[in-house]
Structure formats: structure tokens, C-alpha cells
Amino acid sequence: MQMSERPSGGYLPTVWDPELIQSFTPLCTYETDGHRLEELKHATQLLFKSLTRPEEKIDMINKMQRLDVAKHFKKEIKEFLTHLDPNTPTDLFTVTLQFCLLHQYGFFVGSDVFNKFKNSDGKFKERLSEDPAGLLSLYEASHLGVHEEDVLDETKAFSTKHLKLAMDMLELEKDLAQQSKESLEVPLYWRLPRMEARNFINIYRRDENKKLALSEFAKLDFNLLQSVYLHELKELAE
Image (tube, rainbow, N blue to C red; front, side, top):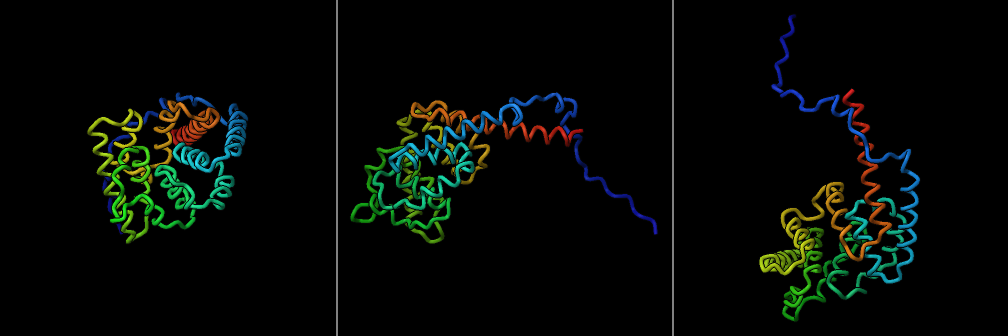
């Protein structure tokens, strides 16, 4: 029986030049910078332990998440969240961050934690529009609910409306405005972690309240992982 010729898939030639790929040089490697990474990791651990107020630790965990380095501190984060009372914080920003983190780490927390921000008629208080950072956090939290959680549908509608109004009126500082724009297009928890980390590293670097050890750790961790990807790409291109 004669075999028929396999039809062509019509694929275009590769745009990758093997010689060009082999010429790429990583910014750093685990062989030369692995020790520095461990030093920065230890410094970040000590910094996290030194924070005494729960809202400070919640904010730092949020930064770790967005920098995609929280995976290095799972034990410390889980231990902290295990003893966290979801009803303790009272400000919008901290309540919503805490809600998101507890959800992400597998702890149950009901959307009723947002009821404290409602009027007697069941609608969100209009004064929340004066807290753009809290609104952005509230908007992100609205994407972590379970099916038929009506309060999160209300949360999404309210935060979307007021974030758009704040942006239209140019009431947001540059980085917050950019983050709001990006989130309204693609919510934070729908994005690829490494792509978000690349973006947030630059944002965090400009933060006046940044933790230097965490900032340096995130940057080195990102570059080292890129060096691993480059090494694998070179092997494939041989």
C-alpha cells in the first residue's frame, strides 16, 4: 500500500536566528548571584517579622504577591493569615486586601465583610469615592467572589463607576491612574504573574514607602528566572 504524502501545514519560516539567540548574555546567574538572592530573601523575612501592625503585614504581602515573590515566603504568610481576624480592619483598603489574600490562600471569608461600608439602605457609602486606592482594591476584590454573591456584583459596579469618574477628572496620581486603567481593562487576578511582576517592579521602585530589601529581592529574582529561560531557549536553538 502506497502512503500518501503528508500535506504541508503551511507554516512560515521561524523568525528566530539561532546565532542571535546564542549571542544573548544573561544579566545574572544563580552561580554568581545565588548567594546575594539568599541574603536578600533573609533580609526580607526579617523585615516581615519586624512589622507589628497587621495592616502593615497585609500591605507587604500584597506587594510580595504583585512582585511574584510571595512563593518564597509561603510559610510566614500562611502562619500570619491563620491567626488573622477578618473583622478587625476598618479601612476600605486593608479590608479588601485582607479579603483577597485570605481567598488566595484558601481561607474562607464571606463577602459580608463589606457590609460595614454600606448605608442603612444597603448601598455603598458615597464617601468611599474619596479613597481611590481603596476603590481599586475593592474593584480587584470583586473578581474573587463565588457564584451568586450579590454583594460582589454591587461592589464591582460601584468601584468601576467611581474609578472611571476619578480617572476622567484626573484626580489620581500617575502610578495609581495607570494601575486603575490596566485593572479596568484586565483585572489583576486575570493576568500572568510574571508579566505583572515585570510591570510592578518599576511601580514599586518609585514608591516612597518601599522596602529596599524586598525591591532588590524582587528584581534579582526576576532576572535570575529570566536567565533560566534564556538558558533553556539556547538549548532548544542548538
